[in-house]
Length: 70
Image (cartoon, rainbow, N blue to C red; front, top):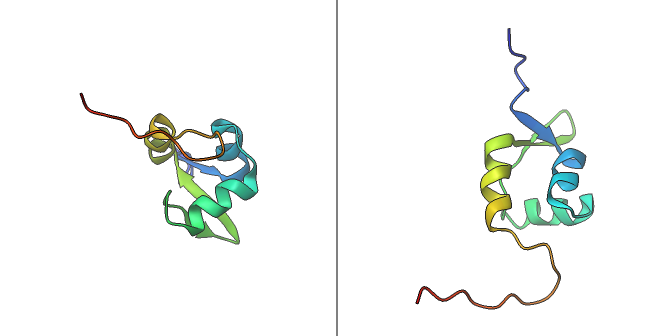
């Protein structure tokens, strides 16, 4: 039987998956760039949400070049 939080990752696991510091991920959550649930004093992020975010996220600092559709 699956546990209720099997499809969620905590802040440290998500930060490791994205290759960024946990404080950087916390900042992204506060900026509403990635949805997270606060449960028991810990941020939890759905695994599928993290995968969607990761596919479009560039962890390098600084301004990103605009992507053109052409």
